[in-house]
Image 1 (cartoon, rainbow, N blue to C red):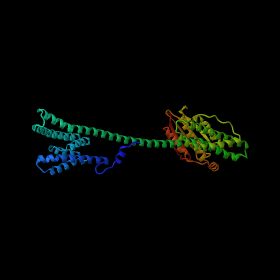
Image 2 (cartoon, helix red, strand yellow):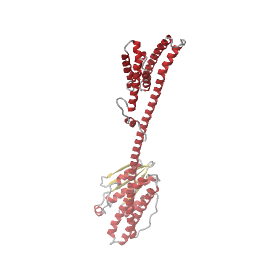
Image 3 (cartoon, rainbow, N blue to C red):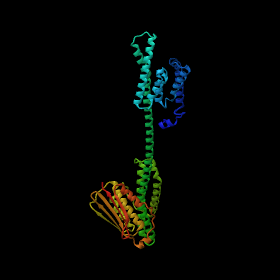
Image 4 (cartoon, rainbow, N blue to C red):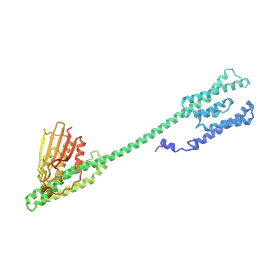
Length: 445
């Protein structure tokens, strides 16, 4: 783990305006050294000015101690060093002050102005001092040495600290920008992780919804017809044994068809079609319940003497609608089919959705309007396919004698989700005559 800029800032703490104790100790030491230097140079200043030496020492100590505030007020420190330059003291304070000023966040014009003032003051003082030393005969050199020495000393006292301070300030700003960038990247990564978790949760929810919808479509219709035939079988078992055998065979066929479709769904879930293993695992309880129910129904039908198992396909399509209506008719429903337009093939998901809409609508008729006459209409249009399932009000006698079938309340919701997922339109509701109508339009592309 790396330390970000925020953690780096909060980890610091020092007295006063210092961010760290180490900085406070360093500045105190520099201020003490500057005070000693200025105090020592104050003796000569007092001698030249004709004042008591104690006054010069006190003045030098006070002036040199100003270096302690270099981090908070670097301009003030540089101005003090410029002010005491004519007294030929404060060289350490001037160097450290210029370095601190150049490393600060102050505008470049202020830094340049103060550095120029310091250079000019140092140049004048050094020029006068070297000239006086040569006049006293201390140095035996030509006149060229005075400007050369004064310029060299002034440049040496101002240029290095300013350049070093600018370098350190630039490096510090670069480090701060890198820390801020690291903080920003860390926040972005955290946000991406949260969004990824949200998307994963959403995908798991969508997968559970999809599996529940598939299970409902596969099981509800078949089992509903099985319950209807079982009720009819119970009614005619003693009166008409031959009809009871036919009903038992139908129950077995439907149970095996439901089991076949469940096995196909299990094969898709187990094949690993790109979905996350955790999402597939979430479907296991739902699938297990459906398989167990269908297997039990199939075994019960086999005991009554069932027919052959239909071949497994890739999924239902519109060509299977006739068989679907035949099963409903065999269960006692009066149903007719009308087809408009030229029959043609569509994409697999479109045909499966259209088939499931008709299947679920017929299942609802078996559940809630047993014995009602039902009309199924399919319309093949240029750019879409439309389907409508409408039932008339159920006869009172048939309604009273119909087997009670439980309803989960998810059939219409599942149909709507399927149709809307393909960009279609789904409408359902009661009719004025007392029946119920389910309509859907799906784009052909």
